[in-house]
Structure formats: structure tokens, C-alpha cells
Image (cartoon, rainbow over the protein chains, first blue to last red):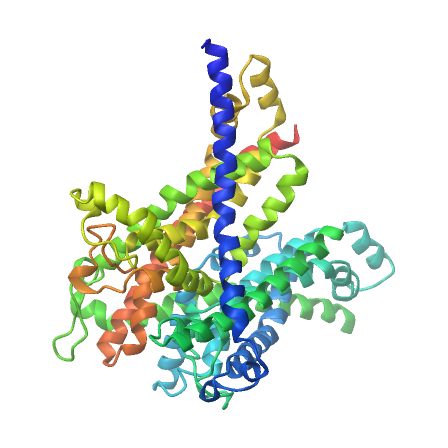
Length: 275
Length: 313
């Protein structure tokens, strides 16, 4: 074989190898979706959605996830959006630059660190573990994850708003803050919503920071100072049980969680692609 | 006058709120340092280099060495397997696949990042573990069992399985950043290489990869950061060993990482010293994560500064 045809042969070998890499990466995703649907779907029934653990349902976990994601968003969205506004509209100084760096590093933090921080924080403030395992601690932990995520996406989407729009608004005599709130934010709306939905999808699936905060429970919501259930915790706890029945319930909960998370992700991607 | 204050107020409000990022960092650092003080004071450096973990009241002794090494071992396996795969994917997407193929494949790879960690754990426990035992660990054990790295009976709940699931989980991070880096390589470099008769593979290996190597290095560090902090899937698959038996001596032994140690054990902490030891594990993980992420940040900023200009030309 001549040198050139050997080089061409090597070329095609590596082409095939790269294609194989893609196939290897896609297999786990397909397998996860397949197994979750096959093993989770038989669990679905009205009872499964509406009752708590004592009657064999996961209604309490669905309710818990909705509550904690809702409360976290109440804190995370305004704080994150305002921080993003600061970084993009006033962020041309060293302080903003360092906040930006810190924010980027926070988005990469291991989520379990956030959980253990929220737990230790409440524990050291209150001085007993009564409040440490509560809905409030869980909300604090998830807010620490959500705020940096939303800050970053808000900054990125506001940066895309053309300066001419700001100038036009200012030329009409509008003040800076009015311009930001009524011209810049509405223009950046699509990007903002995308970022918020992706952050919601991310915190809805977080498990590690919930272990030592809301801790899980077998009942429906009982109050802000009590332990609470959530879908990811329900999956985790059930998967470690010896009983086949509970493991199956874990797969059912996984099916619901993955539907929530993937629907949010795919919807966001399709919407931003159309634009 | 009122209207001028409106602008000022808004700016002050924005600054105060934006400082939340700094506040979160300080709260995290302070809370974990304060919480781990009792354990650090009692054990000193032995807290990091000791191997025992005994929470029995009045005989408490805690050392993190097995879990620090376990974290490094599983992340190392994840990089060894995950990085070549991710690079292959990135090269395929940028250099080989037509647009009609590369767009949907990019979506699918990004969806891998959207799957919650606990679902990886569930799938790993009931699907992937069986695959690993049957097709990977048993054959290796049969032929290479004499080698210390592969000693022990393959059970599936071990360092190798945890490392492999981490490899899958870091693929989206490493692949998508490498993809950006490779597509930022100027076409003039490729054209120059083609013009002297290089094949596509030679162009990629000698010119494209070497041009983007610092960016790819940054992608690998970010992947490492993700692997080090990943908790749920690892805690479900690594076998939950503690004390001496958690030392990562063989790939087929159960182990423990810092993150999985906290997830698996913190709820069982009864004494305040045990609790403090778990917080200390969190502090150690925080430091590892900070070093890795600050490093990645520095690499990536330099990449975008250096190569940013070249992209325009």
C-alpha cells in the first residue's frame, strides 16, 4: 500500500471512530428514556398522582416539588434578573467584573455544598435541628443555585439588546430606570424566559441539596417548618429500598420528573430555534 | 430632583441585589469553615491525611484521605473515558457531519446534561450496573484479575462503575465547549494545511487540535469540576465504603467520594463532632471545586482574549 493510500485509510478510520463516539454518547440517553418509560409507565394511575406514601402514591412528592420550585422561583427570579440587569447595564467597572467572575464560579459549584451550607447556616442561627430540616432551608439552598444561573442568562440576553433602542428611549426624555424596565427588559423577554425555564428545570431535578434540607417525608405538605417530600428525593429513597414495589414507584416518579425536566428543555430549545 | 433620585435608587438597588453573588460565596465559605472548626481543631492535619472514620460516641476519629483519593480516582476515570469520547463528538460535529446531522446531535448531547443526576443513579443502579458486571468487569477480572488494579470480585457497585457513569455525565460539558473551541479555529489555518496536501484527519490532529489546545484544556478542567462535585449518581453506585476499606486500591472495590460521603452519611450524624466532620468534608470539596473552577476560568478568559481576535480575521 502506498503512503498516500495509507494516509487516506487512516483518515477514514478516524472518521468512523468519531462517529462511534457519537453513538456511544447517544446510547445512554436512549437507554435512560426507554427504561424510565417502560418501567415507570405501568405505575401511572389516578391513585398514584393523588395520594401520599401511606396509600401508595407520590402525590405528596409532586406537591413538594411544585411548592419548593415555586417558592425558590419567587426569590430566585427577581434577585437573579436584577443582578443580571446590574451586570449588563452598570457592569463596566472592576467590582462588576469580579461579581461576574464569582457568579460564573457559583454556577459550577457542586450542589451538595449548597445543601450542606443551607443546613449548617440554619443550624447555627437557630441552634437546633428543628428548623434545619424544613421547607425554608430547602428554599434557601435551591435559591443559592438558581440566582447565579438566572443572573448569567439575564446578563447575556440583555447584552443582546441594541444600544439604539436605549438611546431612542433616553432621547424621549425617559429616565434610565424606566428605559431598563419598559424598553430593555421587554426586548430581552425571550432570552429571559428561556433562562428562567432552564433554571427551573435544573432545580426541579436537584437532589443532593435536598437530602439535608427538606429531607423527604411520607405526607403531604405540613408547614414551612416541617420536612417535605420532593420527586427527586422520592426517587432516591425508593431506589435504595429492598422492596420491588417501592423500586417500581421510584421508576414512576422518575418518569414524571423526566417528563417535567425534558419538556421544559425541549420547549425552550424549540422556541429559541424558531426565533 | 425626584426623578434623578429614581435613577440613583434603581442603581443602588441593583448593586445591592447583585452583591448577592458575593454574599453567597462568603456565606458558603464562612458557614463551612465555622462548622468544621471542631473537627479541624481536634484532629489537625490528620483530618485530611487520616484514614479512619469512626462515628461511635467517645471513640470518634475522622480522616478524609480515602474520600479525597476516591474523588480523584473516580474523576480521573471519568476524564480518561469521557474526554476522548467528547473530543470525538466535537470533531464529528464541527468537521465531519453535515449541518442537518450536527444540529440534532448537538441537541441530543445537550439533553444528556438536562437529565437529573438522580435519574442517572436510578438507571445506573438497575440497568448500567448489570451491563458493567456482565460485559466489562467479569471479562477483565477473568483475564487480568492478577493485576492489583483489577483485584477483588466484580459486583458493579464500585469505583469503576461510578467513574464510568461520571464519564457519561461530563460528556455534554466537555463536548459542547470543545465544539465551540474547534469551530472558533480560523478556516485559513485549515485551508493552509489542506493546500500542502494534508488529509482531513491530519489537519484536525496537527493543526486544529493544536490551535485549540488551551481551550480544550479549559473544557477538560470544567469537566473535572463537574465530576468532582457530582453527588447522587456516584453515591448510588460507588458502594458506600467507609474508613480503611474506602481506600481506592482496586477498581472493583467499593469506594467513596467526598460528595457521596456527605450524601450517604450526614443524616446519621448524631454527635456534634461527627456533624462537624461532615461539614469539614464539604469544606474540602469546596476548596477542590474552587481551585478547579478558578483555574478553568483563568484558562478560558485567556483563550477568549488570545484567540478572540483571530476569529474575526
